[in-house]
Length: 523
Image (cartoon, rainbow, N blue to C red; front, side, top):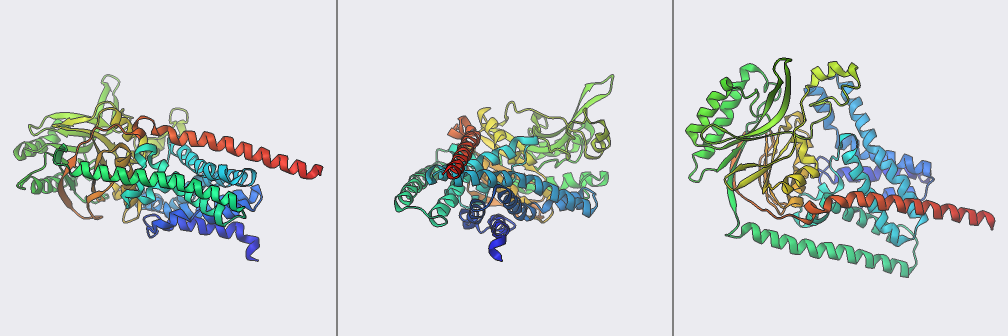
């Protein structure tokens, strides 16, 4: 009886294994290297239709528990009915699972139509290519790709400065595929030896590179001659339900100022203090900014903070653009630079296609209508040239890559993860930010309203971090690096290249499979 439903049971095991390897599921990271084996076993022995069902089941088993925090965001803070929030979770999980369906069907063609050695390389290429596609289609939602599951083990993610987090994912899926081909299928000894040789070449090469690179980066970070700046992080822990209340605004600012003052009173105060996304819950007009500028002057403090911003485009026609911004205040109270968020959250900060779909106008009023910024020049303070990532932007590697190309020698992630509540999502956000640091070889300073705030070094180590939903302030030296990594130059091409190769391999596999069927019928 069980054998009849193995195409359903095995994918559930695979999806559950993936979830268990991530924050929220137990962080049993070694499972990443074996979790896909049941799915590969299921799709190889079934029809294309059943392989598609297997992919859907695996996707739902993985993404439903991984993305459960969507219900908290929409239900508790978004004001939607709980049943609507659950429907939104199901729709998002179904969308994410579509890529797993495509993987299952295409992987079946590769495994059945091609010899083991090309299949060993094409299956991970297929997974990586689909991950990349999910990160760019419909503005992209590359939430917790497999490579992020290794964020706690810096030694295992060093390849990211060559091929990005997609390179880490490739290695993970490669190991799954290798183990499946060796132990889940019948192969000649000679063929297995070639597979083992391929495994030794890739894993040995990646392991050697990772060991040498990690040792090099660790030495450079601790070297006396390294350029450093002391940076302070302030986590205000402001209740999201009270944050935008007019009566709470001054209390919020006072909370941040008090925590900042504790850092500035130290024997070695920070050169720059960083507050989270929209730490100032008001537009920075002259009247409201006055007390803050006075406090900055009296404390001799340079401040980088998030706030909403507006610019009048046409005063006569009352055209105004609103932005989710970060700006730098110098100790004399003057503006030393600002950045407007580039990658906005669809249906959170803007409504896509609102001009083509006028019936969405009420939704625009509900969620806001922010404008897009651009990445131009880093915000400069003393030796630091800061590339800013506001909230959701830390999920997109292309943005930190653009900042490195623009001359940034440090990355700063301002975020307000209070929307997620006490879910696993803040841990997910931190995991993805860690890989941004490794890819670009930049220190990454993460300031979050309710956590998790952190100092991440260019080797991917978390030097210090806060807890969730607690006031927190800390200061540390951040290394300022100017390396242009292989990933910054060319590594962004790795994932789309994988997609092209995988599609070609799938087509060849299908053609060879069809030829085999025709030969059988002829004979």
